[in-house]
Image (tube, rainbow, N blue to C red; front, side):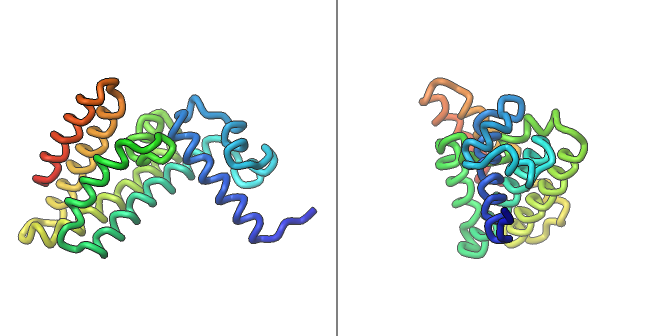
Length: 193
């Protein structure tokens, strides 16, 4: 039976969304193809019709997740040109810190696995991270006239490291008060960027 191009695109989108969710929740080592296909509601054959391997699906989930973050920032900058940074920091350390792990930001959830991934995945991550840094740095230009592009990019790196690290620490601790404290302290410092 032949499927339409639309059906194939819908199936691929379901598999990609499921891969992103499962890899966020279970990590690369903990997630298997069966878990991804179960969440997507497809067979293993359908999975392999779209991805050659688990690592290809992971790479796609990483790229998609970082692109989603970059697009979210671009949208926020367009909607709130003056206050986008404060709104982003608050959202990131609020909702993105407390949502279900399957919905969490790609940066803190995927980075530990990317460190152990193949070169192709690490190169794709690097390219997307650079795009993300440029997106943030571009939004810092209005707030930091006189700073070079390189200096704004450095600020963007610091901001991403603070937010990602803060979310990672806050999610890892078992004490809710400590998690809130971490978020509060990181938000205060990030807001200075």
